[in-house]
Image (cartoon, rainbow, N blue to C red):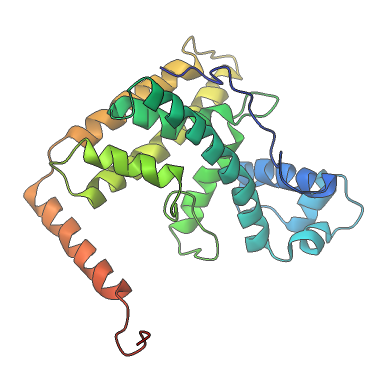
Length: 252
């Protein structure tokens, strides 16, 4: 197992990016507040005030809209998570572990457990949990880091996972991983809450993460019902039809 931090230096939000101190502070405070109260549960002027800004419109000044602000938080975190996953994947390949489904799942999950604040709260997991809830209600202006993964290390890891369970459709495997990822983030959030009050868990964050990896591994290995596979295949055909290029508008 790659242990938390695994000897690699973790980055603060916005590290390595050409951001002013004000922008970094706004992003950091906004991530925490939105992760606690929801994307629509926090007014932008409250984020500005909590970040120590005298201008109540500081967020709009630096990021224009709330959607742009949320995407800026994601852009900084996703860039860091991608670098972390890339380093971990390289280590897995050096150790000939890049085809082990549990190791691949760990590469997906570990960054969520590592992105914590000074109290130990998994701030990125909290933020992504709120984001997933908002995205379920059609907030398409915000790009979810897994649903819109694009051509990056995360996509590479997801595809590697699908190849180790070839008996299931690729879309179904990825769907199961996404569902279990939300469960993993909820487990990390609950773990912090329980270790922060009188009912202290003996289980460490690493142990909770291992449990989630094992549960996800079991989920993706489970045979699917024929009706589920048929439904997934139909959805995939519809997606292909919807996204295929229009021959009339294609370049000659």
